[in-house]
Length: 523
Image (cartoon, rainbow, N blue to C red):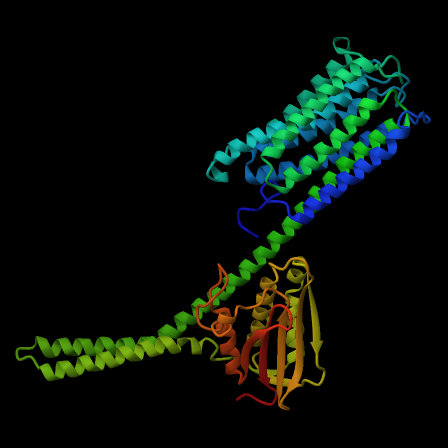
């Protein structure tokens, strides 16, 4: 995962995610079209539906707000704090909405409510998210102006929650004690006042349009996409409200169920995307740790090789240079002896270069404890160690292990390192695969009687023809962050075990790495 794409708010949506959002909107639109012809058909009064729906709305909006606050705290984002605070207000305002709804708890509702209190509280809730989205877009520009997260001001989550609570109290007081200052939505408990409702709903619709334009012009993330889905769902619901004439109709019940469904879908989508991003980050961290271990191992090997192989030749160079200086700095310079010492220094220098070139051959020497190893068991252990990464990358692994393959005498740690490195390369080759399933196959088979052949294949992008002959060279890599030592070290280990390692193109896609090892004894 790229380092600068770490959260919902800065990770661009994939085509699959965009299709999922459009599918959800399509389903909500179809549901609205099904309801529209019978929207004003009277249905029985189910007073308990409002407390039930409001309880679900309370939970859904609080979970969404918590998710946003968590990312706001990590990335010091005032924009996410403002957006999350809008969801907190939307969650809290449903409490007085449920309490004041006529018939839910008392015939006329609690809190000294009038016939229009619940309607205004519902509109305050509907206006909260579009207003929060406008603040989110504006504050995000300020967040982006900072060079790094460390330079941004604190997210001020406590202030955001406090502001949402204060606004909820003020909105509740206005809709209850100050209800006379607001236009009347309803003539009585069920019948809608069409003229006032049409005017207010038109203003709410305009608010949706303004916030949608703001968000559409600056959209660049998964979060932006799902917020656009939520806004589009609100527009569909607003169009339904404009056509309703009374409560307790098919359209009225459908409106509440659609509101709940749209918020629930957005919350579940955000949770799913957060978990997916967390999984990708965990896999990336694991891969970085493994790459770090390989680099440390490589550096330790280089240091040991230089100290052992190069140290002696460098000492010889220095000794001959000192001798040459001594021959030339004496009272009677001995030119012939100095020239001989310089020639010896040159020879020692050439030996130094040869030692450096051969140092890599020592990376796998001193194999340590060798034992009888089952090749099939080593393959299974290597695959098992990468099972989580395979699942996280949605890669299927197929093992085709020949039971006739016997054991070999080898260092199991080194051979497993080879298999893990080859499997890891195969997984990385599959990262760019789109439009087909991702597969890795591992096959073992007898080869020429006393040999075993292990083939690790993938259906990735394959290896360029001009790179096949070079991929095992020291420090050659096709990865931006690779060391170029993994395959070189793997080949050295295999050759130290008397085997061969080579690569070829796959039958249709990808590449195949072949490991040939002797079955009988060490060379």
